[in-house]
Length: 261
Length: 365
Image (cartoon, rainbow over all chains, first blue to last red; front, top):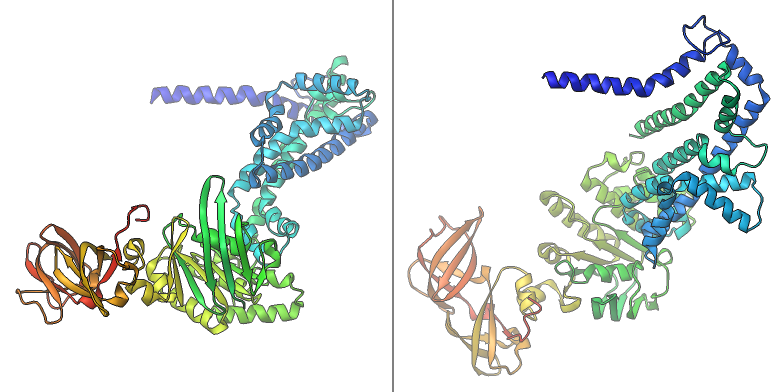
């Protein structure tokens, strides 16, 4: 029994170590003092106001959001199509294509980033927002493929065959039957893709065109000068977006699932 | 409604032949069962008629039209699956109306048809529920309603009763046959369950190892099996080695170790030809057991020892031995069943026996 006490204490310590920094950022975001640090002098929302008045940061938010949404759209579309091909059809080189699709998860991001840059240099293409989108899609795609594939395997072909026998063409069958049944995975995959894109920094630093900042690269840039309290507020917003969006989405999905029962 | 015809249809999956040169006719409005153990090719035939598999040889004709290259969604077929395959995200009404949508049926008319279909399967008023809110038997009725509401040329049933529990299965069996009879749609039913096949079919096609073994009305297939496989697959059969000792216009005389000599009618020795060695098939329920040693007139009989009894309520299955031959008998229990170790007289009428040629290859058993 004593051993359990130690294990419990150890587990608590690990969690404190992991979450304390996050808690510090969340708390300090509301500190009224000029200087980041304890003790907290008073409650204030001024750093948030400063944040919203800062044009560079707002632009970075805009970039990050549109990049995240576009990445989610591209990665999900490609991921669904790839999963359909891999699960529903037999063709040569299937295992190789699966490995290739999943590989961005396994290759270190720096290597991936440099590789893509060299490739584009060889094609003599300049860095652009499109390239950034392409890169993020590549990084997010494996997650979508894995999630969608897992669900697709569980959708019996009977459903599709029944729809076809009733007169639906292959395309109508996809829209009417396969996609709706796949929706939870599509939704989860899109969320993954959005959050992966939204807080990616390593590859983004390599790929972003001059003058374009995403929220993480903006924070990184600001930190090089000083740790301003604004960054805590920005950190707060980042955490809310990357943690809050999936949680809210999950709750929403459960709500709709319950209503159908 | 249409006649379906398979002309030399084959299907191979790589090196494996699933169906070998099948020639089968499914008459218009008939209920035909493809019966056989799993892997015999019956489901492959159904899937080829449906358009879910493409034959590697031969032609499939529906209503006289070759459909080999017609995609499934243009074939106008009703398909019912073992696992119902109702769309879980659609209501019952949406499920049933699914096929009507692609046939340009107006909304109002469609909802009338849905209601009629639900009445046919005796489940009115469930339009707004979801499949998960219905029991297995109810779901299968909905699947049937969805398949027949489009007025298909052919109704294809892929082991539709196998997922139901025993009591429900027998109830649905009667009902399914009644519905088929009422709407008169040509139906192809796939099953591995011989009692379903015998109870429901106008015709039975017995299959094994990708080949059609026998085709005929249920009584024919049951009483005069074409080969050992069919004899063993349908019902409980005893097979004895026999020698052909004589023949005349009306019968063939056989000599068996268990029963001595007996004369099997010609029509029950059709497949025998002029072979000298034969296999005698005796159905377990055709064997009559009695105490004492009198053999009833018009039968051949022998004393046997009861080795084991399998008591089944109104019936008993006896495992018997006559000399070196072991055999099974199924009999209604009149009073008390014979105990283990008892000596009884086993008798059978020669006209209830069937003679088959001895098969060289044991591949089909």
